[in-house]
Amino acid sequence: MARLEQVITNIVDVFLEYADDDDGKKPQLNIEELKKVLELEIQSPELKDKINADDIGEAMEMLDKNHDGEVNFREFCRCVCVLARCYYQKKTGKGGKKVKGKEPEAEQED
Image (cartoon, rainbow, N blue to C red; front, side):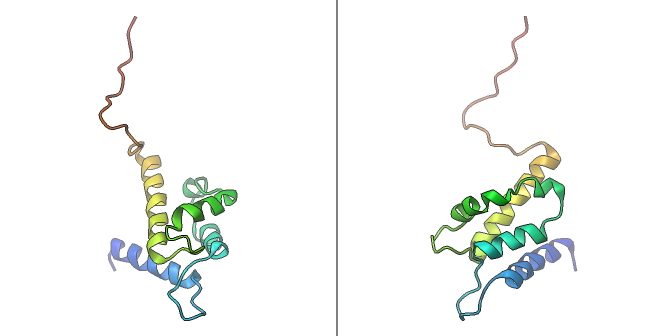
């Protein structure tokens, strides 16, 4: 399997492994399941440093766009995307937010 295919299938498989679907509804992650995913499935110090266990509740609020107290697959993908961007920025030193229409100020020489 190609690398990108493997990434895609892994994202789906991880979500389904941790998501609660006991009640016959669509699989979703509650706050405890999300915490477990983040704690067990992210081992890299580069990414682990971006995730503070105390901030999971805040992350849940940010991810839970429909405010149902659970993270659906779309919301989970948004979380993975944010982590990927953090890793990209750390690895390349690029990708930080820029203010539209503003050029970086040049350093003045004396």
